[in-house]
Amino acid sequence: MTGKPGKTRVAVVFGGRSAEHAISCVSAGSVLAALDPERYDVVPVGITRDGRWVLHDGKALAIDAGQLPEVTDGTAVCLVGDPAGRGLAVLDAGQAIGRLTAVDVVFPVLHGAYGEDGTIQGLLEMSGLPYVGSGVFASAASMDKEFTKKLLSAAGIPQGDHVVLRDAAGALSADPELLDATARERLGLPVFVKPSRAGSSIGITKVTDWAQFPAAVATAAAVDPKVVVEAAVPGREVECGVLARPGSPVPDTSLPAEIRLRPGTDWYDFDAKYLADAVEFDVPADLTPAQTAAVQEMSRRAYLAMDCRGLARVDFFLSTDPATGADRLVVNEVNTMPGFTPISMFPRMWAASGVSYPELVDRLVRSALDAG
Image (tube, rainbow, N blue to C red; front, side, top):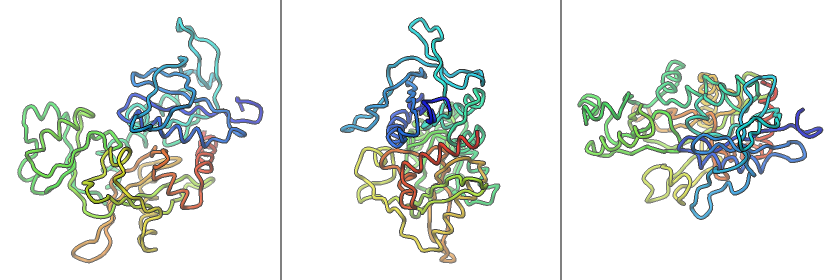
């Protein structure tokens, strides 16, 4: 190992250029706290909003009185592109390459663009560094809601009705309605207008009147020029964690959890997720054994259909088919780097399943080393 004698050196990378910069910082704070200092030599690496990589002290990575954390300054570093280097080069004030910090494995706790979408995964592949999480293809495809839906549909996994708008901002200026009467009738109201490649509910609008539609598209297109318009799927919001099983191609699944909105909260937006006391979490969810098994099995299928690696969180709507009275499961999203904040569902589901937060982080790091 390249760290201190007997220790594995882990570079925890966080922040980044996406709109989810702050949530990445909060997730990283929890991961850093969970890595056992007796086993791991940890190198916190922050990426500023403009893309600079800096060594970070790993402190103040939490939401404090409603204030979101941010990576700003630090000692500049860059990733060594040569696989023989396997690490980070420190840059001096004149930007000359200085001493090398060798790394055994990278934990990219990055959410959104330039982190969860296959970009940093490609960079790490070229640098020859093992890393936690899915590879380039699965990361990119899972980040893009259009292609997630296409791949899951090809695997026979149910999806909600939707329409994809390409170059939405430009198309909107030419046609403020964008959707014809047939599409509107098919989707019905309400609809959710979303950036195709974003998370944490950033840029999403719930539309209850078609008069709101142009503004909703503009909001989403400000985050991503490709926009997805989804029909509302009535039902319970259920999630399930998936974790690679050592020595097996079949992953493990957690007990599912349910998100319940408190009265007065319209939907699970950014504020409800991170800032307001607006939701309740049932961990584990109050499901029948048959429902639990169905959620777990479909989570495995979704993970494998997307070619995921290491971990994923699969989000569902669970409803009742009005014609048959049978349960109906619809996959909403597959998240290849789910939140690791103190309130995030992924670590809480695994804790309820008997895997503590430190054990979870350790297992992910070990899995990445084994795969790399």
